[in-house]
Image 1 (cartoon, rainbow, N blue to C red):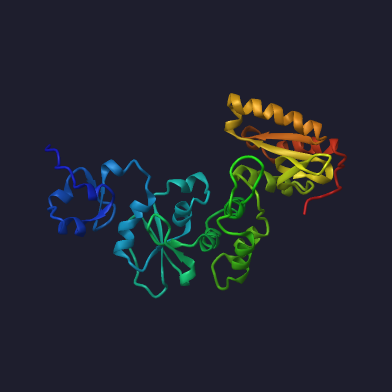
Image 2: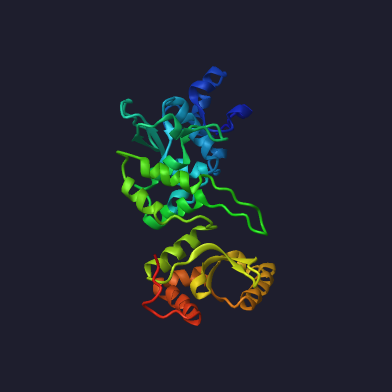
Length: 319
């Protein structure tokens, strides 16, 4: 089998066959073995297939063929960086939105949604492809994600903090903006799910596991734990920030991800543990293994810390 002639550098990403022909590539070259045809009129260099890659590059030809369409739902979420469950992170399907009056779209690897979007609900991210805005994407995710995962998406959007260590984190969307947008939405599918999630969204969360842990403790009926809670010294100055803290019973919960297994992080954790003890707080550490063991196991660990702080079952229930 003959090796196909190399493509021009401008066609290293997915491209339109019509553009390639205008650039001088023959129909025979566009049928060569080094090109894949995911949908009519589109070619994908097999060398780029492993790059799940460049989602914007993969989607761009579809948007060129459908100038009125925008990326939406989980595809827009991936483009914005919104955290999603593993099953959606390498999703083979592209989600596109078109106006309800637009012609029907039937293409492989495309799911077309009919949405009437306002101009403010469409953005052009730095990747140069049209997509639903982060707040509109949040509402559309309400029909696809379980409640804890939707809350985690909301937590990520509104997360912001400025601690005395690490980088300042700025919200993609201020909580007040997200709340106002969701409350004001009318005649939008799954809006009730979106509103239920916003009620549970909190500012200051650093990771999806922290969201799931907070919701687990709430579901267990334990006292309210606040994300990113500062632990204060005798003068009222913040010394540490906890992943989740319950000031009423001086109990904090830390989620230990994989990076806590690193030697340098373990040394920092040891010093942190001493500071927590000096501040007279009761610390509970929860790992991924604990979460896999189930809600009762995790809640039981946290209950032991709360009891050391003076809590008794049936008192100080969560909000």
